[in-house]
Image (tube, rainbow, N blue to C red; front, side, top):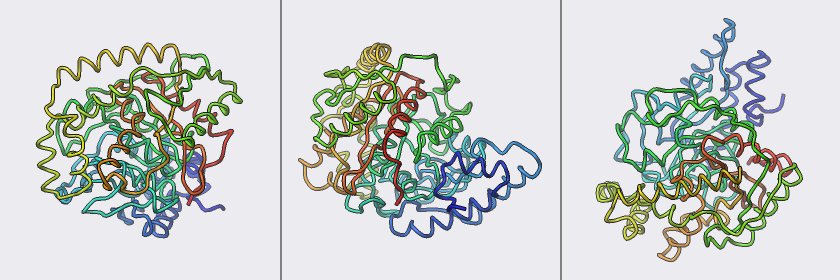
Length: 459
């Protein structure tokens, strides 16, 4: 049989459910792959083989009894270190949180467990999940499996690198400003940022979140196939009483026309030619699959949306965040906070939320006209690693290029990063956006792009 780590999550779960292989064999294959490739990329920074095998044994016992093992029966899944997983430290890449042990699972993690997933290991992220790069003083750097000279993305950097390298079939990530979509883009896999309220999102060990965290941060999956994202979303979005933003909305909405608005240069992004070419190529793939693609000159405002999201994310409690970063001593976290200070401080919550209200209305009307929007993930190909630390101009260059990622979370709608190929060793892809709770439209369009293009290559 082909090495199990190469299979899709859907294929693997079917084999386990039908007893053609055991969950134990799945776990052993995943651990072997982790041991073989992780030392080179440092994607997984905490894992316990005995616990992994114990989870597999529980699943095999359930199957032997005739119990329903769950949608992800025996599928190895990684969890980001910024999410609570009972018995593990929720470090978010910080030495200050080395001993911050979670007592309960984050609801998204609990849902993966209930769906029969094997929680394989904890994936790395930059300090406090502030950057689109991956370094911290506690766990070290994560490397891009395709090219160690480019960023693996951030902040769910270990998640993207792990899935790209075949460590686990699905990865849990979180996204407040691109932290699922950019690692997927940089590592040549797919990543889905769900709608606000789709996947229950909460870390019990940290208590309440700022309003920026409440309306901006979501949990979501990264995977090597669009269909694996679909089943991961179904598993992760199960009801949970611990998130007041959670909404029990069907995963499949009413039929909409297969109509796509393609915008290669949203709100002054000025992407590089390779990014423009990727978007145009994805539009052609959609047309071949029967979608009507209309090229538009611009979208509703993205620059202002990105500015407001940044203020809600980093401006609320700015001084406390800066003091924490100074105690941690991480240069990347400090560069982020100091680099955006003039944009986010002082902070006016009322003004930010009032403008969010109007921008969301404009975007909702736009997405009612166009069921899906096709645009860049970033204005540039994945950056040279740690480019944001080089100088002030490089820092500004990075933040400007990430406009399509930062703007969308303010609106609360889903966005899908679809890998479309590589330029040399460097991955490239596109972003799809749809109306709130219409992840199904993003996934349908993403599948059309995926199936008529290249298959994701694993490292």
